[in-house]
Length: 610
Image (cartoon, rainbow, N blue to C red; front, side):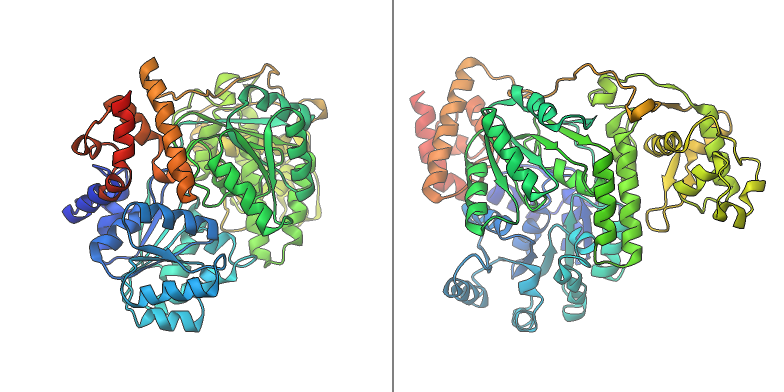
């Protein structure tokens, strides 16, 4: 993390005149300043923090060609459309259009008529494309969704890993990598692969305070999902499922319950997937039921909930998926079901993956970290952010904070576990520690002579299953760390050392017979269909609905998602300020010069008529 940088006046001018914003958000100015200074940058910023502006503004300040690497065609097309509405010369070359269209775009690029060119890594990392771009001497490369370098590279998208060659082809061209999802191991991997370790790293935090987090043990997914969505008729949401078959089944179930639900998975035709995605992006109240094939780059601001019917693959995948909710800053709810079958399936997926043993080991450790989150005995948001090395006070609005259930003092159990971990040199994983404290004389325990340690059999009052839960809760509450980058060894955190010295206590949620949690079964209700941060009068609210209707008309004329024309925050600002001329309209949030020219007249006319 580098020191805060002064804001470049040219960058501020572009921000206001092109994008209609009067100031940068947290972290943006620092990232932009370092990129303008010619440095490589890795920016890890939460969803909705405005990562795209971190490369778009420098690209327009410096001029020349900036190449943006993006994983999905839909993401490219939406960003290009939004930039063009703001008067930016942006384009993409992709597989969704004809060769003639792509050739025409390239001619514009070669003629210097395009400022930002969006490409997939597969299209960029060919000798022909790299040679052609080299002749144009690009100003910047921007790698969006950069966690794919680490998470997808070896297994699914080898071209993302091929991006490591960019610094060899273009040693003098600064590269910026951006992601909302990267733990310390992933950040190190990105730095090594993309920058050879040479980059300024900015981590602005992972907290999304407007998201209400909840986890529930899976009992009857139909009833649990039905109960969750029943009060949310008319809200946009995503329901994630583990399999294609279940996706179809859940979508049908929701439709039978009176919801507008559409399936989305890789087994559908491209035409059907595109049609369902377009409806989700443009219509109100659509629930997308999807596998993880859906979501990356989906920038729909008013998604009010994300529901997981099955356990995600790890904390990073989970954080990425819930990050699609509440991008407008309003309250949203994320709810997960998990059960023993989910854990077994996830373990099987990892073992069957065509990957090296080291990657499999790390994925098992990430899954362990997610299970620790699921069993968090105190603030769930705190447990999730602890995985990303971020510390917060209890949030007061997750399911655990609102309905803590029964916990009991487990300080003596924590002392037994922490002592065993320290006595064995903090070099062993949970399985071995459980064997040790329960007094199980395994071959491994005898080989290391751990049956001679003072901690051997020091926790016989709990069985192996209970101890696994206790260890996960010790991780979730910050007493233990997992060495994700190594072999999954449990390590005593500073908070754990404080407990051993008598300065901390550990309370945990015991696991009852049959594996059922002691959490109270009373329901916790989250979310609202009304904006929480803005108090509109009846007249303002009526005008807002008319502004939304006009926005939808203008978007349909251009075959664009409505939010690309103006975000809800811009419309709310219009309803409150009621501009009646161009000078007043230009002060509205998100109104730059191009949007003033394109949309000022119809919106001003509507406001005057009220």
